[in-house]
Length: 252
Image (cartoon, rainbow, N blue to C red; front, top):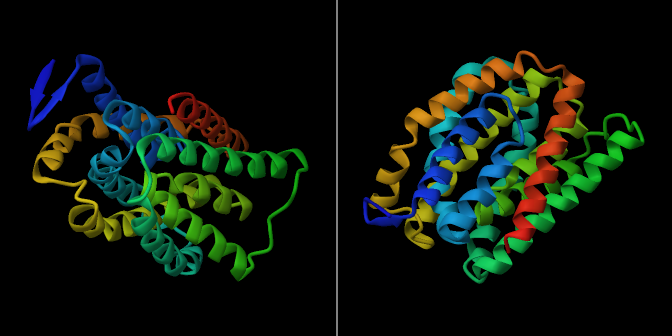
């Protein structure tokens, strides 16, 4: 066992924590979907609600890297459509998340991922073109993204569904997602500190040890994404969504 900033961690939990840093770094520089593996990995090691607060500063640190590298590619029109509705989802998630125990929490996250997966697969198999960019669709995805990011840092599934539906090219997908997540994740911080009390000084210090692992993951992600075509990128997102959903439900 290892004692770190008030946490007593097994060696396996500490190793999982470091892997989470690498996966998050990779996800923010384009290897979309691997963060979906990080969320259940951290939830198993630390518990559902506590892990959501522990994860948030890690995501924000990685968000800055993603924005720095891909900010030029963001499609801001989609951000303005999504963000107001996402705020509503975050507020709803803040309230309802207090009523959910860890087991239910993980099951809900797994079901949410699976539902997103079904829609994405349906779009690919039917070779459906871009869904018309109706306001109701952006509102629905924004609320779902806000709720799921608050209760489990899982807005990635909703964002993947929305951005893939818009048929954004690889770099535009990554840049738009980078700006979306840095805005939303910073907005969530006060709720985790003062409402849920899942971010503390000790949890923040523990998160800081992941900085080198996030940097390693970010560099790996940049290298990988340059070699992936747009079509393979879409299927990679879908594959990571599948693995994360299976892992989350089996661990509940």
